[in-house]
Image (cartoon, rainbow, N blue to C red; front, side, top):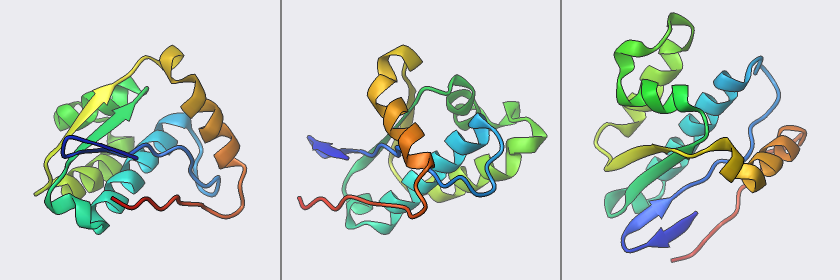
Amino acid sequence: MSIKSKVVVLRATGISQSGVFDVTTAKLLAIKEAVSIFQDSAWHKSFHLILKTDCTNCEQWLRNPILVPAAFKDIVDDILNLCSGLMWEIKAIPRIANGTADRLAKSGILRDIPFLWKFQC
């Protein structure tokens, strides 16, 4: 997470292995978790959430939910419901430019217990 001129950037870098069968589901669940963490924080009242993903499908589906395949509709709907009332945006970033986050996500997927870092503003 980083704070820059009243903008909070939240990067979800890991997700539990249990129940995740494909990369797209894992990325959507990571986005959902990031939004949930942001929404539960005090920051959601005064900061703008910027979600960054290297999954262009996730970015397109959250911008235009009518494009979501049925298999991912419930997760995307959950994310959009969590985002209602928030100031937020989603940005696609090239996978090649996301090497560090990708390595962290792959190592985080193998963890048995989730971890969070706490930041004070």
